[in-house]
Amino acid sequence: MGKRKFDDDEIMGILREHRTGATVAEVCHRHGISEPTFYRWQSSQLRTVGFDVGRIRALELENQKLKKLLAEAMLTAATLSEMLAKASK
Image (cartoon, rainbow, N blue to C red; front, top):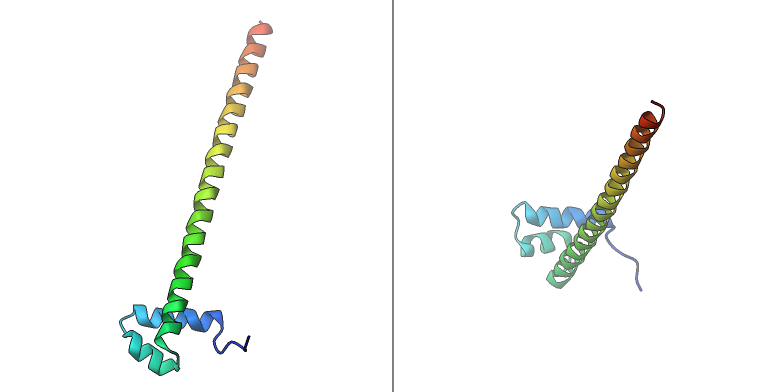
């Protein structure tokens, strides 16, 4: 495998350049890459974004579980303190 000509930041800059309105052909010509390379980078970026969405969803689910556990613990603590107050009267 050969040395990469562009690092990740440069690739993101090239893709961003296309999103700002330049055509694929113009961007490819300006940076000396082929159109298939451009589209491969673009699909790779979409897969990465999709992975992040899945990771965020997993974190949201974990956050919901933790909130539920906290609510149950707080309810238990409130019940125990209420029972203690009744017992001490």
